[in-house]
Length: 70
Image (cartoon, rainbow, N blue to C red):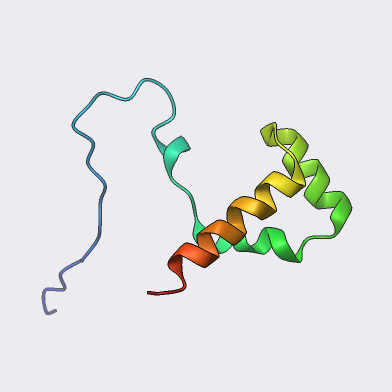
């Protein structure tokens, strides 16, 4: 049986994280799925994370505008 190497990417932080280490990691595809949610579900998600739907949409448009050149 031939040897198969496993290639993976890891994130290494030099400072000790107190709490959930995955909290600062964002899945871009999951974030963009927010746009396809019905308005009621958007409102529920925004409420659960402590912000407004308009603020999330404004941030997403800013990201789209800033990353359009890449």
